[in-house]
Length: 227
Image (tube, rainbow, N blue to C red; front, side):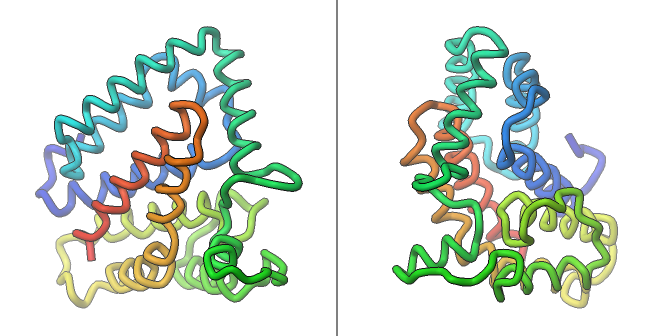
């Protein structure tokens, strides 16, 4: 996808695009997402990005192909959209017992076995992410969620990688964007992303979100080479 760039810059752009894709996948499913699933364009994008990220193993490509085949089993766009929304609700937004969690604050509290009493928008974790976003000069698209919602964190990481790619010709170690990337990966991504995606893969009842979990696990693994 980014053949005209050197390997490092290509990975930065691809990492940004993959994070942008996840920011969309981790919100309430839309008709646009359904259309991209049905016509195969989403898997085509994933496969191209996987090549740039070095994730294109035979197993990975096989699972992508199996996922696309599974999509056809849902029939019409309306039925696929309905099933995506049902599972999204069961996993993340069920009013009393969501199976998983999309907020870093609540995820960490659950992991530690403690009751989370902090208001999501003003929790220390959310405020730290919000401060990172403000310091980087980024304007959020998704303003309806606290800053530690996974889709917001993905949106921010996509921004960081894009900025880092744009200045890729500058010295690596002194890059202010690389410093922001390193801080965010160590402070937030390492704290919960991989655990969340493993949990998502295990708890999903259909191939849809199980695949998103699998894809997330692989994406997080690729980030280890970008520090």
